[in-house]
Image 1 (cartoon, helix red, strand yellow):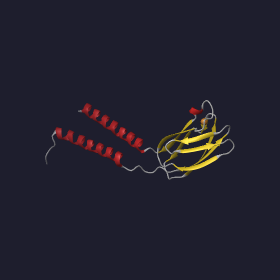
Image 2 (cartoon, rainbow, N blue to C red; image 1 turned 45 degrees about the vertical axis):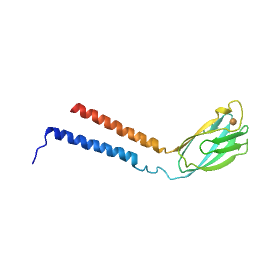
Image 3 (cartoon, protein in one colour; image 1 turned 90 degrees about the vertical axis):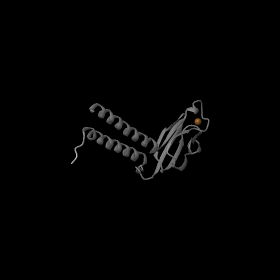
Image 4 (tube, rainbow, N blue to C red; image 1 turned 180 degrees about the vertical axis):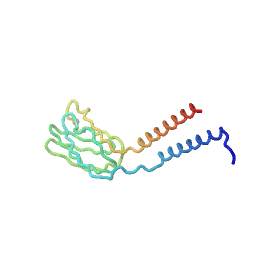
Length: 159
Ligand SMILES: [Cu+2]
């Protein structure tokens, strides 16, 4: 039986740890992200008035079917959704309905598309379609990188 020299005993675990970190990093990059949800139909009513959308922020999951009801309470307004190129006009007292498939993830602005008064340009809202895969992967990779750094700092101190 051969004895390991002190050099070999301290080197071997570091190589194994580095290989493991590399594997974890690759897994984070390549692993399919499990579906957190099954697509469903969302019913959302948006009240449109001078000079706001209520709610002004919508959150859905990618794959969801979104049924929107627009209701204007004062004057004629519009609803334009960036990225999905949806544009509707809504008159007071007559609700407007439309359905779309949230098939693109990300953040999309919606805004009034009918000049409705002095603060009309500020009538904006945001549709968030998640989960946002690149962000998930980037943050998971950051966690692995920080763990690797802490690891090597600790190793250097104890060496
Ligand atoms: Cu407007």
